[in-house]
Length: 287
Image 1 (spheres, rainbow, N blue to C red):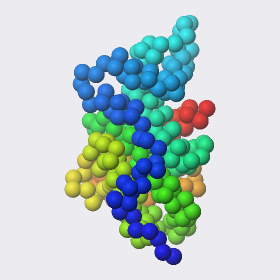
Image 2: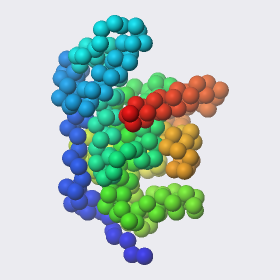
Image 3: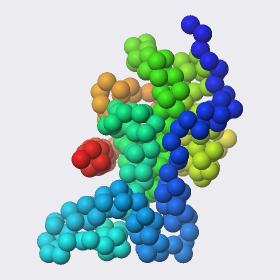
Image 4: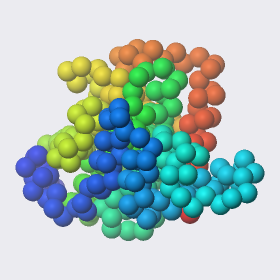
């Protein structure tokens, strides 16, 4: 069967067919990278999107009920103060990107690939804390959520062809990037890199997406590249996207070494936290 050759030019030429990348994500990143950014600035960004604001208020009122607070939280600034800036950023990022991916898929509901992406984002955040690496929590989450964005592009660009590649990868036990490069000349990781650079995301995030399957290919093994790679493998091992779509792949010794991970008894607590948070986030955004 003849497959189309996919280059950066092809990807960017067809980018107009995709939904617009959410401005909220860039604004959230600006609050992360600006040391002078305040709670009021973040609350203003969140308040401009009714869907995100509603999620943040729902989260704040859940927290308020747990702490037996009587007054209902109806103000975004008060909600941000109650649950914290990082948690508000996380809600805003997942909400924005979840909507974006659903629009790319052209269908309602969450696919197994997106559930897996949420798992990788959560896992990357938790690994950063566990290994004490000074990586932005928001950068870890976004890189995890978008690490397979190239697959969503392929599903959008080749809806009748690409799903078969997943099935063949699992059936034959072959890494999907190898099948993609053989057929199209480019892998979903490369496509994700091209897209995220076009969307002007930070280079650290783009690099982590580009090298999440084969981190040794990167010029430099940055902490974020190592985190997203290990998070991807670990999420598959924990079946965070469902057993049918989870295939444990190659774990780079260099990435594990760069993070200083020791697979001792202490990691079981980490695994439990990752599974619980991943399940909670997916359930929260499926309500």
